[in-house]
Length: 242
Image (cartoon, rainbow, N blue to C red; front, side, top):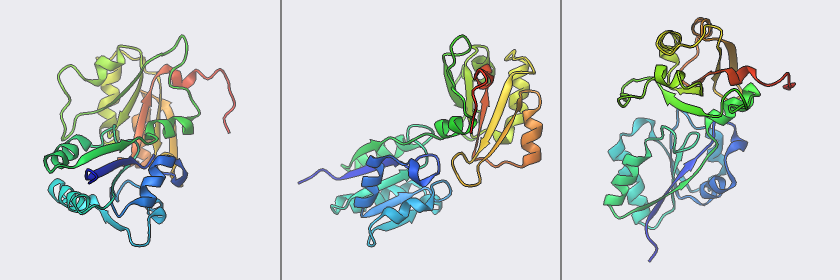
């Protein structure tokens, strides 16, 4: 008898054609798909079988999600948990995997294209640039989930790395103030915000740490935006971008 299994699949940043082939095959073979309806492109669900059950997790708590997935997996069905971007980044998959394991259900992760790389492509930039920055910090500002001791934006800024902030546009004013203050960044340090990278309504704002917060406020961007900060954003050597 095969071990019951749930596949955690990265749907990619938004565009339907940026899911991996492996992820697409998992969707095509699934009997149950539990997906993040507020974040995942609904177009992905068109690749599911006509009799596949698709359930939006937005109205489900963790217990309900695990119950739905475990019931189907234990019944011998193929189950996909569809996450936005790559499940490894702020996907909250650990708690799901542990809960499934307690029921004797194995988990397998199918990586996806992170919104970080979709947004970098939209910006037309390389995040690691020789003589400028060879490191990238992927982080966020504290919210309902606190930051561990020692992890803060100012400390990361002092390293000189390219900084990418998830889930932080609502606090961008305080964030930029911290980067220029305790973080020591010059006010003219390049900054950019990409809203809904790779989606049809994608928008890009460019500026500096001294003015990007004002531009974001005027644009009214929601939480589905990434903030980029660092000299690498302006280190493209004049390369043309289409």
